[in-house]
Length: 316
Image (cartoon, rainbow, N blue to C red; front, side):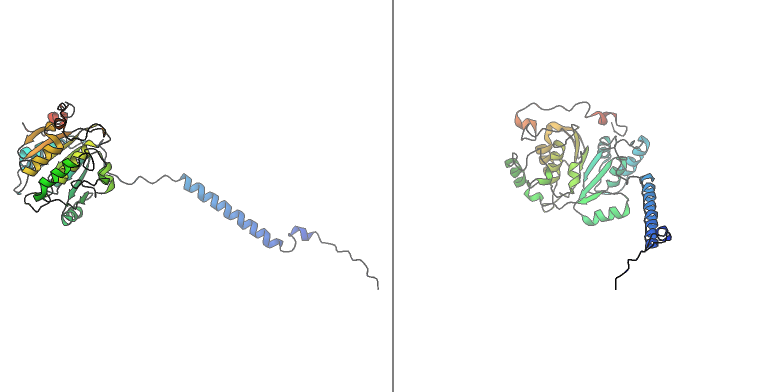
């Protein structure tokens, strides 16, 4: 039998509803449009939100120092305390003279005066270094934002003569006066501090530690050498004030004159010696002291000593 062709007619409602499965597709398009609009609105809201405030950092040197009245009161009570192994009034005033404005202050030794130095350097950054981890933890627990780090000294007072001969022998190598201490192999260089401490341009360095009162104690040989290199290796041209306590002791005196240099000594107050160390170019010399090079003795400029003369805490 011959088949007869058939004509299929589609009703207009078929197109109106999108054909087979058209309703489901339409719903998906609407959902896609809704979520796209939501995502766009959320993104615009995030962009318009204000940025969170920056995390707190250490105060900059633009902060005003303590008033002369407050500073004088702090010095008075520190000098009149009954604690042993403390600085004399003349020594306290000498250190305060170097802290007339907020500074980057590095202190070797956690002593009776630690909180005084931190208070006098109001607005600056004060960092302490000590070999006693327990003492550091106690200070950090009791005082907020107290910054201190432990140092593992490998030197002994009994070996100081060998160490100074070693430093002289390697002055053109690992014990040179201008270098990055982080990579130093010199036996009297402190090279295991947190990396960022070597990048700070220290304005004042106070050496009142580690212990040096017996042959088996670490002594201050490494502290004095490290302070001398930090001062000479600064990237900024400003001088560094280095104060050495117990200067009457043989090790402190010999190492200070060897690396901080007698020509840089600007004053002595009882057992405290105050040196002003200038920055030096790495190609200038391999000697720490100009007198040992046969050159002219550098004179400390009036700008370097302006704080010492004008400071309101200074004793006559």
